[in-house]
Image (cartoon, rainbow, N blue to C red; front, side, top):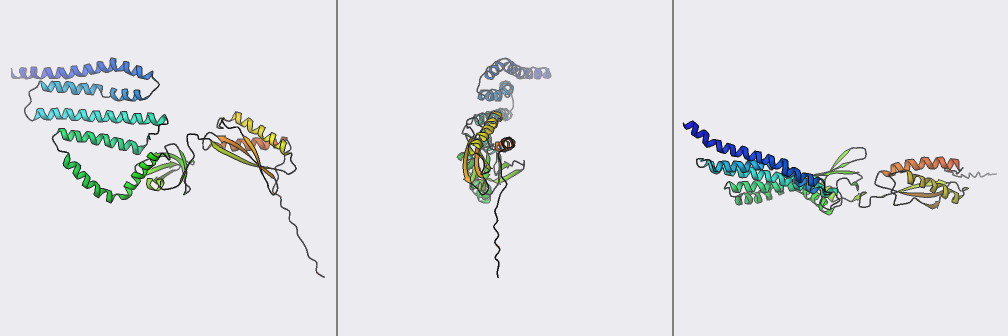
Length: 345
Protein backbone atom coordinates (compact mmCIF):
# COMPACT_ATOMS: atom_id res chain seq x y z
CA UNK A 1 0.00 0.00 0.00
CA UNK A 2 2.81 2.37 0.91
CA UNK A 3 4.54 1.58 -2.38
CA UNK A 4 1.35 2.33 -4.27
CA UNK A 5 0.97 5.67 -2.47
CA UNK A 6 4.59 6.57 -3.15
CA UNK A 7 4.15 5.55 -6.78
CA UNK A 8 1.12 7.82 -7.13
CA UNK A 9 2.91 10.69 -5.41
CA UNK A 10 5.84 10.55 -7.82
CA UNK A 11 3.84 9.76 -10.93
CA UNK A 12 2.36 13.26 -11.22
CA UNK A 13 5.75 15.08 -11.00
CA UNK A 14 7.27 12.69 -13.53
CA UNK A 15 4.37 13.23 -15.91
CA UNK A 16 4.72 16.99 -15.38
CA UNK A 17 8.40 16.87 -16.37
CA UNK A 18 7.74 14.63 -19.38
CA UNK A 19 4.85 16.84 -20.46
CA UNK A 20 6.95 19.98 -20.11
CA UNK A 21 9.73 18.53 -22.24
CA UNK A 22 7.17 17.41 -24.83
CA UNK A 23 5.61 20.90 -24.95
CA UNK A 24 9.09 22.35 -25.34
CA UNK A 25 9.77 19.99 -28.24
CA UNK A 26 6.48 20.99 -29.91
CA UNK A 27 7.24 24.68 -29.28
CA UNK A 28 10.69 24.35 -30.84
CA UNK A 29 9.51 22.25 -33.80
CA UNK A 30 6.58 24.40 -34.88
CA UNK A 31 6.90 27.88 -33.40
CA UNK A 32 10.67 28.31 -33.60
CA UNK A 33 10.85 26.73 -37.04
CA UNK A 34 8.58 29.49 -38.35
CA UNK A 35 10.72 32.18 -36.73
CA UNK A 36 13.91 30.65 -38.20
CA UNK A 37 12.30 30.47 -41.63
CA UNK A 38 11.42 34.16 -41.38
CA UNK A 39 14.93 35.13 -40.18
CA UNK A 40 16.54 33.17 -43.02
CA UNK A 41 14.69 35.39 -45.48
CA UNK A 42 16.08 38.63 -44.05
CA UNK A 43 19.33 40.20 -45.23
CA UNK A 44 20.63 40.94 -41.71
CA UNK A 45 22.49 37.97 -40.19
CA UNK A 46 22.15 39.18 -36.60
CA UNK A 47 18.63 37.77 -36.21
CA UNK A 48 19.93 34.33 -37.24
CA UNK A 49 22.50 34.53 -34.45
CA UNK A 50 19.85 35.36 -31.83
CA UNK A 51 17.40 32.70 -33.04
CA UNK A 52 20.06 29.97 -33.15
CA UNK A 53 21.28 30.85 -29.65
CA UNK A 54 17.75 30.58 -28.18
CA UNK A 55 16.95 27.51 -30.26
CA UNK A 56 19.70 25.52 -28.54
CA UNK A 57 18.19 26.18 -25.08
CA UNK A 58 14.41 26.10 -25.62
CA UNK A 59 13.84 22.47 -24.61
CA UNK A 60 16.23 22.78 -21.65
CA UNK A 61 14.36 25.82 -20.34
CA UNK A 62 11.03 23.99 -20.64
CA UNK A 63 12.62 21.12 -18.72
CA UNK A 64 13.74 23.44 -15.91
CA UNK A 65 10.30 25.08 -15.77
CA UNK A 66 8.49 21.73 -15.60
CA UNK A 67 11.00 20.43 -13.03
CA UNK A 68 10.36 23.46 -10.84
CA UNK A 69 6.57 22.93 -11.09
CA UNK A 70 6.96 19.23 -10.35
CA UNK A 71 9.12 19.79 -7.26
CA UNK A 72 6.66 22.34 -5.92
CA UNK A 73 4.06 19.54 -5.80
CA UNK A 74 6.39 17.13 -4.01
CA UNK A 75 6.94 17.32 -0.29
CA UNK A 76 10.67 17.28 0.30
CA UNK A 77 12.22 17.53 3.71
CA UNK A 78 14.14 20.67 4.58
CA UNK A 79 16.67 21.73 3.38
CA UNK A 80 16.43 19.55 0.23
CA UNK A 81 13.54 21.52 -1.22
CA UNK A 82 15.53 24.75 -0.89
CA UNK A 83 18.65 23.18 -2.42
CA UNK A 84 16.60 21.83 -5.34
CA UNK A 85 15.13 25.23 -6.19
CA UNK A 86 18.55 26.87 -5.93
CA UNK A 87 20.10 24.23 -8.20
CA UNK A 88 17.38 24.83 -10.78
CA UNK A 89 18.05 28.57 -10.58
CA UNK A 90 21.81 27.96 -10.91
CA UNK A 91 21.32 25.89 -14.07
CA UNK A 92 19.02 28.59 -15.43
CA UNK A 93 21.68 31.26 -14.86
CA UNK A 94 24.35 29.08 -16.50
CA UNK A 95 22.15 28.46 -19.55
CA UNK A 96 21.32 32.16 -19.85
CA UNK A 97 25.05 33.01 -19.63
CA UNK A 98 25.85 30.53 -22.40
CA UNK A 99 23.06 31.92 -24.57
CA UNK A 100 24.10 35.53 -23.98
CA UNK A 101 27.71 34.63 -24.80
CA UNK A 102 26.68 33.01 -28.10
CA UNK A 103 24.56 36.03 -29.04
CA UNK A 104 27.27 38.60 -28.30
CA UNK A 105 30.03 36.56 -29.99
CA UNK A 106 27.85 36.02 -33.04
CA UNK A 107 26.89 39.70 -33.28
CA UNK A 108 30.56 40.67 -32.99
CA UNK A 109 31.35 38.47 -35.98
CA UNK A 110 28.44 39.93 -37.95
CA UNK A 111 29.46 43.51 -37.19
CA UNK A 112 33.13 42.88 -37.96
CA UNK A 113 32.23 41.37 -41.35
CA UNK A 114 30.18 44.46 -42.19
CA UNK A 115 33.27 46.69 -41.58
CA UNK A 116 32.04 47.88 -38.23
CA UNK A 117 34.41 49.84 -36.02
CA UNK A 118 33.73 47.33 -33.23
CA UNK A 119 36.66 44.87 -33.15
CA UNK A 120 36.14 41.12 -33.29
CA UNK A 121 39.35 39.51 -32.07
CA UNK A 122 40.44 36.87 -29.57
CA UNK A 123 41.26 39.32 -26.80
CA UNK A 124 38.00 41.24 -27.14
CA UNK A 125 35.91 38.07 -27.24
CA UNK A 126 37.79 36.75 -24.23
CA UNK A 127 37.08 39.87 -22.20
CA UNK A 128 33.38 39.72 -23.06
CA UNK A 129 33.14 36.03 -22.16
CA UNK A 130 34.95 36.51 -18.84
CA UNK A 131 32.62 39.39 -17.95
CA UNK A 132 29.46 37.39 -18.74
CA UNK A 133 30.52 34.24 -16.88
CA UNK A 134 31.87 36.19 -13.91
CA UNK A 135 28.54 38.00 -13.57
CA UNK A 136 26.65 34.70 -13.78
CA UNK A 137 28.95 33.14 -11.16
CA UNK A 138 28.36 36.03 -8.75
CA UNK A 139 24.58 35.75 -9.22
CA UNK A 140 24.73 32.01 -8.41
CA UNK A 141 26.79 32.65 -5.28
CA UNK A 142 24.33 35.30 -4.17
CA UNK A 143 21.40 32.90 -4.72
CA UNK A 144 23.06 30.33 -2.43
CA UNK A 145 23.30 32.94 0.30
CA UNK A 146 27.05 33.48 -0.07
CA UNK A 147 27.91 37.14 0.38
CA UNK A 148 29.93 38.40 -2.56
CA UNK A 149 31.08 41.61 -0.82
CA UNK A 150 34.07 39.94 0.95
CA UNK A 151 34.88 38.14 -2.30
CA UNK A 152 34.96 41.41 -4.24
CA UNK A 153 37.11 43.01 -1.52
CA UNK A 154 39.50 40.07 -1.56
CA UNK A 155 39.67 40.21 -5.34
CA UNK A 156 40.52 43.90 -5.16
CA UNK A 157 43.39 43.36 -2.71
CA UNK A 158 44.57 40.26 -4.53
CA UNK A 159 44.31 42.07 -7.85
CA UNK A 160 46.78 44.70 -6.64
CA UNK A 161 49.31 42.03 -5.69
CA UNK A 162 48.78 40.16 -8.95
CA UNK A 163 49.17 43.35 -10.99
CA UNK A 164 52.58 43.97 -9.42
CA UNK A 165 53.68 40.38 -10.03
CA UNK A 166 52.34 40.28 -13.59
CA UNK A 167 53.40 43.73 -14.70
CA UNK A 168 54.70 42.59 -18.10
CA UNK A 169 51.64 40.44 -18.77
CA UNK A 170 49.28 43.31 -17.93
CA UNK A 171 51.36 45.62 -20.11
CA UNK A 172 50.80 43.25 -23.04
CA UNK A 173 47.09 42.97 -22.19
CA UNK A 174 46.51 46.73 -22.17
CA UNK A 175 48.73 47.07 -25.23
CA UNK A 176 46.37 44.73 -27.06
CA UNK A 177 43.34 46.71 -25.86
CA UNK A 178 45.03 49.91 -27.07
CA UNK A 179 45.55 48.36 -30.52
CA UNK A 180 41.88 47.36 -30.69
CA UNK A 181 40.52 50.72 -29.58
CA UNK A 182 42.88 52.80 -31.73
CA UNK A 183 42.04 50.63 -34.78
CA UNK A 184 45.62 50.89 -36.08
CA UNK A 185 45.32 47.32 -37.31
CA UNK A 186 42.74 44.55 -37.56
CA UNK A 187 42.74 40.85 -38.27
CA UNK A 188 43.49 40.35 -41.95
CA UNK A 189 45.46 43.59 -42.36
CA UNK A 190 48.90 43.44 -43.95
CA UNK A 191 51.36 45.47 -41.85
CA UNK A 192 55.08 46.25 -41.74
CA UNK A 193 56.87 47.12 -38.48
CA UNK A 194 59.89 49.35 -37.98
CA UNK A 195 61.98 46.28 -37.05
CA UNK A 196 61.43 44.85 -40.54
CA UNK A 197 58.78 42.24 -39.72
CA UNK A 198 55.79 42.24 -42.01
CA UNK A 199 52.80 40.00 -42.63
CA UNK A 200 49.05 39.51 -42.22
CA UNK A 201 47.54 39.98 -38.76
CA UNK A 202 46.17 36.55 -37.81
CA UNK A 203 45.04 37.23 -34.25
CA UNK A 204 45.36 39.88 -31.54
CA UNK A 205 45.51 37.78 -28.36
CA UNK A 206 45.87 38.43 -24.65
CA UNK A 207 49.67 38.74 -24.76
CA UNK A 208 50.79 38.33 -28.35
CA UNK A 209 49.72 39.44 -31.79
CA UNK A 210 50.38 36.80 -34.44
CA UNK A 211 51.55 37.77 -37.93
CA UNK A 212 51.67 35.41 -40.90
CA UNK A 213 54.49 36.18 -43.33
CA UNK A 214 54.03 35.74 -47.06
CA UNK A 215 56.30 32.69 -46.71
CA UNK A 216 53.56 31.30 -44.36
CA UNK A 217 55.75 31.64 -41.26
CA UNK A 218 54.05 32.75 -38.02
CA UNK A 219 55.56 35.56 -35.92
CA UNK A 220 54.36 36.23 -32.34
CA UNK A 221 54.99 39.80 -31.17
CA UNK A 222 54.21 41.02 -27.60
CA UNK A 223 51.36 43.53 -27.65
CA UNK A 224 53.34 46.05 -25.61
CA UNK A 225 56.13 46.01 -28.21
CA UNK A 226 53.66 46.21 -31.09
CA UNK A 227 51.66 49.12 -29.65
CA UNK A 228 54.86 51.07 -29.03
CA UNK A 229 56.43 50.50 -32.45
CA UNK A 230 56.00 52.36 -35.72
CA UNK A 231 53.89 50.31 -38.13
CA UNK A 232 52.77 50.70 -41.74
CA UNK A 233 49.34 49.33 -42.60
CA UNK A 234 48.94 48.39 -46.27
CA UNK A 235 45.24 47.59 -45.80
CA UNK A 236 42.73 50.42 -45.43
CA UNK A 237 39.27 51.50 -46.56
CA UNK A 238 40.92 52.14 -49.94
CA UNK A 239 43.36 49.25 -50.23
CA UNK A 240 44.57 50.23 -53.72
CA UNK A 241 48.30 49.64 -53.89
CA UNK A 242 50.45 51.72 -56.26
CA UNK A 243 52.73 49.68 -58.49
CA UNK A 244 55.49 51.74 -60.16
CA UNK A 245 57.55 49.94 -62.85
CA UNK A 246 60.79 51.54 -64.01
CA UNK A 247 61.90 51.10 -67.67
CA UNK A 248 64.85 52.48 -69.62
CA UNK A 249 65.13 52.89 -73.41
CA UNK A 250 67.94 53.91 -75.71
CA UNK A 251 68.70 57.60 -76.37
CA UNK A 252 68.10 56.86 -80.07
CA UNK A 253 64.45 55.89 -79.41
CA UNK A 254 61.44 57.94 -80.47
CA UNK A 255 59.99 58.73 -77.05
CA UNK A 256 56.50 59.46 -78.40
CA UNK A 257 56.49 56.01 -80.02
CA UNK A 258 57.81 54.45 -76.81
CA UNK A 259 55.02 56.12 -74.86
CA UNK A 260 52.30 54.88 -77.23
CA UNK A 261 53.61 51.30 -77.23
CA UNK A 262 54.05 51.15 -73.44
CA UNK A 263 50.57 52.53 -72.76
CA UNK A 264 49.08 50.10 -75.27
CA UNK A 265 50.64 47.15 -73.43
CA UNK A 266 49.61 48.60 -70.06
CA UNK A 267 45.99 49.12 -71.14
CA UNK A 268 45.71 45.55 -72.42
CA UNK A 269 46.84 44.23 -69.03
CA UNK A 270 44.44 46.70 -67.37
CA UNK A 271 41.55 45.01 -69.18
CA UNK A 272 42.81 41.44 -68.70
CA UNK A 273 44.05 41.22 -65.10
CA UNK A 274 41.45 41.11 -62.32
CA UNK A 275 43.98 42.16 -59.68
CA UNK A 276 44.37 45.63 -61.26
CA UNK A 277 42.15 48.28 -59.70
CA UNK A 278 39.77 49.45 -62.44
CA UNK A 279 39.33 52.87 -60.81
CA UNK A 280 42.90 53.87 -61.78
CA UNK A 281 44.07 53.89 -65.40
CA UNK A 282 47.76 53.14 -66.07
CA UNK A 283 49.90 56.26 -66.54
CA UNK A 284 53.39 56.89 -67.90
CA UNK A 285 55.92 59.51 -66.78
CA UNK A 286 59.43 60.09 -68.17
CA UNK A 287 61.69 60.79 -65.24
CA UNK A 288 65.41 61.11 -66.01
CA UNK A 289 68.34 61.03 -68.41
CA UNK A 290 70.37 58.18 -66.96
CA UNK A 291 73.94 57.15 -67.86
CA UNK A 292 72.90 54.84 -70.70
CA UNK A 293 69.11 55.25 -71.08
CA UNK A 294 66.12 57.55 -70.84
CA UNK A 295 64.16 56.24 -67.86
CA UNK A 296 60.41 56.38 -67.33
CA UNK A 297 57.82 54.81 -65.03
CA UNK A 298 54.54 53.02 -65.70
CA UNK A 299 52.10 53.27 -62.77
CA UNK A 300 49.41 50.68 -62.03
CA UNK A 301 47.10 50.29 -59.04
CA UNK A 302 46.64 46.85 -57.50
CA UNK A 303 43.50 46.05 -55.53
CA UNK A 304 45.48 45.05 -52.45
CA UNK A 305 49.00 44.40 -51.23
CA UNK A 306 50.55 41.43 -53.04
CA UNK A 307 48.93 42.14 -56.40
CA UNK A 308 52.09 43.94 -57.51
CA UNK A 309 53.88 40.61 -58.03
CA UNK A 310 51.31 39.46 -60.60
CA UNK A 311 51.26 42.86 -62.33
CA UNK A 312 55.06 43.12 -62.53
CA UNK A 313 55.42 39.59 -63.90
CA UNK A 314 52.77 40.05 -66.62
CA UNK A 315 53.81 43.57 -67.68
CA UNK A 316 57.56 42.91 -67.94
CA UNK A 317 56.99 39.84 -70.14
CA UNK A 318 54.45 41.60 -72.37
CA UNK A 319 56.50 44.80 -72.72
CA UNK A 320 59.73 42.94 -73.47
CA UNK A 321 58.00 41.00 -76.26
CA UNK A 322 56.38 44.15 -77.70
CA UNK A 323 59.62 46.17 -77.60
CA UNK A 324 61.29 43.43 -79.67
CA UNK A 325 58.49 43.64 -82.24
CA UNK A 326 58.76 47.44 -82.41
CA UNK A 327 62.61 47.45 -82.46
CA UNK A 328 62.75 49.53 -79.29
CA UNK A 329 66.08 49.00 -77.59
CA UNK A 330 66.49 48.45 -73.86
CA UNK A 331 70.19 49.27 -73.62
CA UNK A 332 72.83 47.53 -71.58
CA UNK A 333 74.67 49.77 -69.12
CA UNK A 334 77.35 51.67 -71.06
CA UNK A 335 80.43 53.24 -69.58
CA UNK A 336 83.02 55.15 -71.63
CA UNK A 337 86.58 54.82 -70.32
CA UNK A 338 89.25 57.28 -71.54
CA UNK A 339 92.79 56.13 -70.96
CA UNK A 340 95.63 58.61 -71.37
CA UNK A 341 99.22 57.56 -71.86
CA UNK A 342 101.86 60.16 -71.22
CA UNK A 343 105.01 59.72 -73.33
CA UNK A 344 108.13 60.98 -71.65
CA UNK A 345 111.26 61.83 -73.63
